[in-house]
Image (cartoon, rainbow, N blue to C red; front, side, top):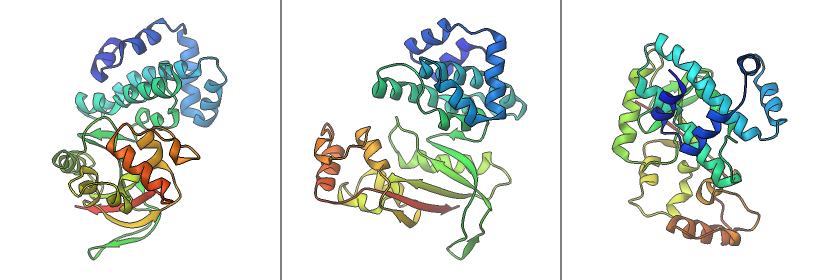
Length: 268
């Protein structure tokens, strides 16, 4: 795997490619960063953030680390389309960085470490991550014990949340993660039950909710605002109203309501 193949595979933006291609770093310095990443990730993040233009440096390093990870994908017999689909998050987060900070780069550095270390994979519409569940759960007479390895579900942005594609993802995950029981957990604003107050009954988000048994709710976390409006503000009346979801969510918040997260579980 070389850089050009990687660029094409994840459809990386042309301007982002130019930043990487023009970055001046000799092999010994890159190796130093790479060793630092695998030996002490927190210190690695702090080291990079001390550099002027750190978001571009994160972009450069995560692309290089991702290219290096291809060898492990091959050793595990993982198909190329899964590799490219998984690392397409770099394109997504690079464009989010442009939107939020006005520059091509990576701000979401902690999230991408999971991809590089082969601890998260995109299988169809959804992403999956093996995870030791932190509590005992019982659903439909099936008991899941604390510390049992299950699959944590993430919903990347950028595509419609089509129910058929979602179900296909669950099927792919149950085959891909052989040896892990097909138990899926998800902690997301998309599972917040009160979304039914601002969405139509035909909403793909509500259909996605119904896939899970939602048994816990966090009313105080503000992920919904961050994803709906791309930011969180102290005063909801300052939020934009470019989409119907934004308009409905803004009115709901201005009425004194909250949009939190739900914790759901699904067992195949």
